Image (cartoon, rainbow, N blue to C red):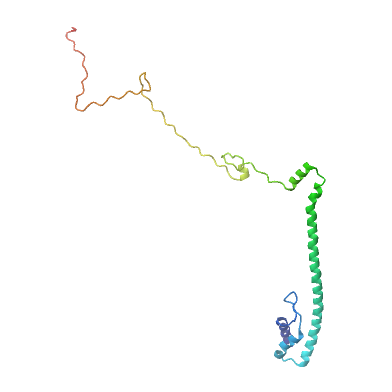
Length: 203
């Protein structure tokens, strides 16, 4: 008997055509005793007395369901009205907040109005580039978090001046080199001093 009751309960919960009306939640359906009995009577071999008792019990539950459904629909309508009212009140509060600057501005002179507007809508401060030791803009190393790059020094080696040969008084003027002597000519032998004979000089 207990097994039969559990089977009946599971069948009632899983049958797709149990209700004539569907609620907002598809998982909740209105009980229909006639359809339920037609779907289970033959399989369970129910007697007429059993069908009558089940039908009466199901009808009582159907009445309870209809009453609950009516309350549900009534509260849903109230909930929608409540949500609409809540959104309307929220919109009114936002309007009051936006109107506050105009309320204050009425009691300010022209100069105060300008300062007040600047306070309400501050302009982003422009950061001036700071020169780093490395010569690049962008702030100090502490601000940027980067180590300044050191400049690479380019070493220029100066050529050492070659010692110049002594030149005659006409400095800066190069004397032309003597043309090379033609080949085949014997070089002149150096002159020898005149020989002295017996210490006597002859003109």
